[in-house]
Amino acid sequence: MIIVLAHAFIRPEAFEHVAAAARVQAHSSRIEPGCLQYEVLQTLDQPTRIATTERYRSREDFEAHMAAPHTQAFLAVVGAAVTAAPVIESFEVSEP
Image (cartoon, rainbow, N blue to C red; front, side, top):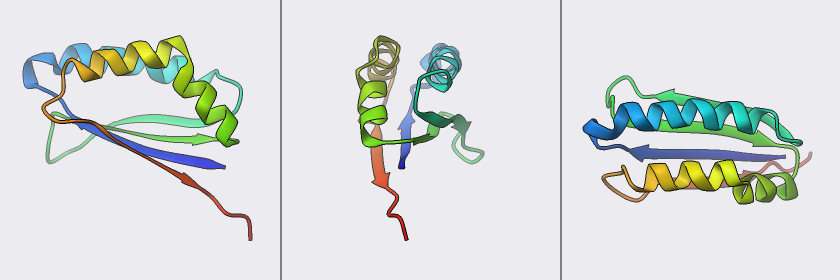
């Protein structure tokens, strides 16, 4: 299983646009084969920071997600609205 944690700081004037795009992204991602979880979060102490937590069955499922047109479109929206580069970390869960 792959777990992905991502966050970005969004310019205040672009936040609502990014939040709307994030809702579409979450819906589109949740119906992808291999997506086990996709949550969009807004931090309480920094209201222009958004984060996602994601889980995928396999690395191939995550790679397919990253290549999907809806993900590329979402990344373009976020990229145009951030105050610094987004941070995307992916982790492979080792089996005991």
